[in-house]
Amino acid sequence: MPSDNTTAQTADQTLGQLAYDRIRADILKGQFRPGSPLRLQALKERYGFSFSPLREALNRLQSEQLVVSYAARGFRVTEISTTEMWDAIETRILIDCEAFRRSIRRGDDDWEGRVMGSFHKLSVCFERNLKLGREATEDETTQLEDRHRAFHGALISASGSNWMQVFSTQLYNQTQRYRWPYFTTEGGNVFLKQSYLAEHSQIAAHAVARREDEAVAMMAKGFRRTGEIIESLLKGQDEVARGT
Amino acid sequence: MPSDNTTAQTADQTLGQLAYDRIRADILKGQFRPGSPLRLQALKERYGFSFSPLREALNRLQSEQLVVSYAARGFRVTEISTTEMWDAIETRILIDCEAFRRSIRRGDDDWEGRVMGSFHKLSVCFERNLKLGREATEDETTQLEDRHRAFHGALISASGSNWMQVFSTQLYNQTQRYRWPYFTTEGGNVFLKQSYLAEHSQIAAHAVARREDEAVAMMAKGFRRTGEIIESLLKGQDEVARGT
DNA sequence: AAATCCGGGATTTTCGAAAATATTCCGGGG
DNA sequence: CCCCGGAATATTTTCGAAAATCCCGGATTT
Image (cartoon, rainbow over all chains, first blue to last red; front, top):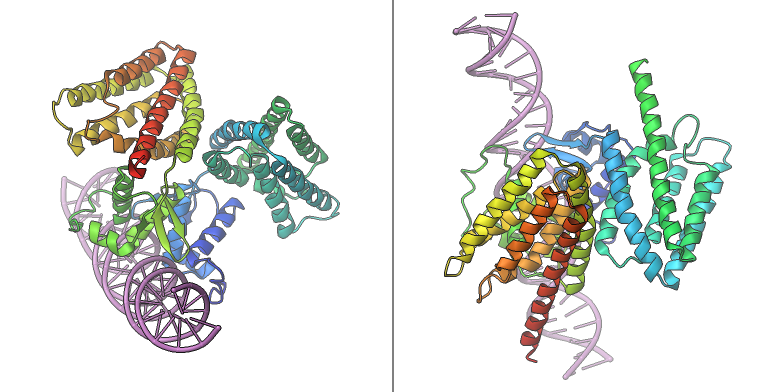
């Protein structure tokens, strides 16, 4: 059922921007299978936008490597693979760690405020989802994911580099594609463990204490650990699928 | 006078792709002043494409930070500034040097072939333009620029990282915006000097000899030197403009 | 049997105009 | 004289349909 866009257009949101936001969110949450075609008719029925704003969105997503386009054959969701994941992770380590290092050197009180503030919000949400006693709803999971993103954004927010910011966001989006499926498995969110929160807490502490090397090393280690966990889960899944 | 697009569409080029290529090339060559609005009517008259392919192109360029869009107020060419330039350069150093290092470690004979081959083509073109005895035409300058780009692409072509490739290209585009104006000044191409060619020659030599640290250090130094030259030229230009 | 060559339907891409939105200009009031 | 509405104009955004292209299946040829 298409949503109602007639009332939208509040503020400065064009339909194209709205379509972009929604399709991107859906790709990041795996609503479209990697590699599957994004047919305009289907998107029109799903979202209620007409072709123009949809194409606008898809073209932007193409530049961000979330979709690929084939001349006169339309768009597809970009494939995922372990190799691609590690490329995104290692490149993110390169970018984020450098941006983090610079932020630790240059960050002022405002930066410290953003780091501790966003950590607090992450922490509160984390504990809340942890104590639910049931599966988290999509909204609850989305909120946690958003706060996690905001925290990492805050860490590097005093780097002074626009480009690192842009690239970091792009890579965060990519890696979210790999993480999200495991937020919503039967056994609950794989990453919803005290050890994860503790790790983030230590990163924040190192950051504001200006322990550059410790902070950066811990960040890199965290990224790699996440990659390893996902890799092992992916592998297990493959074996199940293959019946081995 | 709009160009004739009726015969185009050879191979798998859509009009949108064509528009993207041409507008991007024109932005990189400073055909549109930084900060100036890109009006659809004007673009339509200039290129002969209708709105849809033009918007398609602009949306893609937006994601690459070559244009900025304002909701319901259209698109503008992204501004340039010394700060922005240094951000692009320093970020490119981060990306390209790491990708270069990995290529030096992992590159096989094919990679060496690409490095030496593309250097040769650059070198030939360089010498040719140097001996012209007159101002280079736009085509001659474009050829030199393309081969310079190809050489830097070859250097990092064995990094094994897609993402670094993508980011490197994006940053190369950005920095070209700053370099191109000085390819075509009255006194001739500022960068058309033997010392520049010699530097690139040494980088290639270090690369195939697998002298990792020397190669990478020289690359970083080259990027920074270019930045300094442009900065001083920009400053001088400002003073002229201001009449000091 | 494999390869090639059509049609028909599905899909994307492009167009031109309508709708929505911004910008400019002008006259009136403070 | 300057500031504020408000119509007229310019521009962007969106729509729906036409044109171009692709895809699938069946018939024909080798």
